[in-house]
Picture 1 (tube, rainbow, N blue to C red):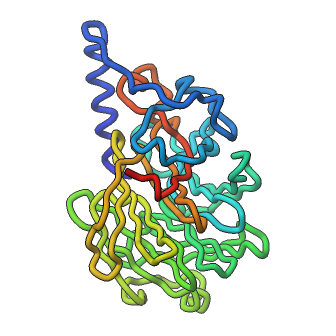
Picture 2: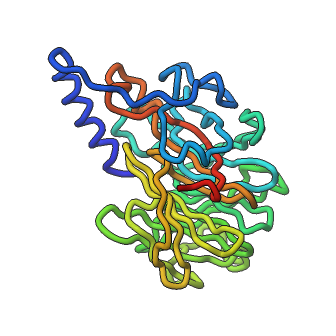
Length: 310
């Protein structure tokens, strides 16, 4: 996420100025808030927005920490739980804040655990695991790691070197991927072997040259995930739109595209379903009188059945 909320603030100012003279249509209503699992926020609409590919959505949970201003970004699915990385924001122009990782029960949507990620984390854009019990948190400028077999929250960290930005992350067996976000062209995914990261001293810089592979990814990339067949899925979004694309990992060519919920950030496979999280309707952007007039409300963690995507 970057310039999107500045654009939303501009739209809001225009909407407020024109409100006495024109009627602005709100986003079409969708699922009732009462039918979504988890802890609903104490702000927002009674229904979440209708989004593309509703028929492919098989589970909906409230994103955690919404009332606290926690803005969801990264997502990982493993150990029978859904993990969400957030940063706290109190205004539409605040893009960094205290980071937190939540563990959600995928059935009830309730928080089963959480821990804070210390400074310098300010924008926890990605979560990933290499299947070894370690959870990686990708901040814009720093990669953090915690062993979930021990005490969660006891973290190691490595500052990211030149050209390496932790805007998103993806899980794979024995490796993790860290990706960059760009609006003016392609971003890149960098693969790092878990064994190398385990051996890397705490506090040592992590550089692109230490990656074992690189892949080009589309502009506006917010999340990435590998399916059981090795296909790479990339989520792209802005405030008012979302897209899910499947890429050929060898060439980077996009083989299919699907419209999805606006504001979609991190994605991950749990073996069968593709989980995603949307920041559309996070408190820092939506807790204003003008928000329902110009912004979609969909601050959800949701699961997709890829076979139903159209």
